[in-house]
Length: 118
Image (cartoon, rainbow, N blue to C red; front, side):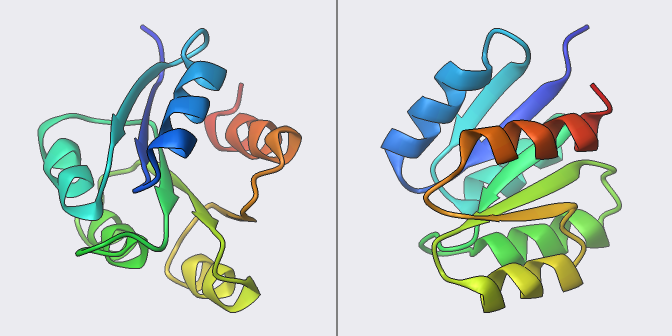
């Protein structure tokens, strides 16, 4: 069975690009906000969550906290255009990796490989 990735980002262009980039190797599901990410994670197991920090409503940091509080076992890579302070905060909350937007695809692929031991 293919490993599953959940992409949570409010920017549809980023979600679509990431889906196209990874759908050949992983089962990919995308949602447009934090609340929908939590709903999806409550229904299905995902091996990895690609999580934007800045989303309307429930932020990526809140989703990350929810994932860790509920001990889901999903690995989490946080993506942010907010700067290094937000990325450090994500790491302190338990993100497995934190990458700055615009996304360097090679760094993202490396982070995913490390998270999923591919």
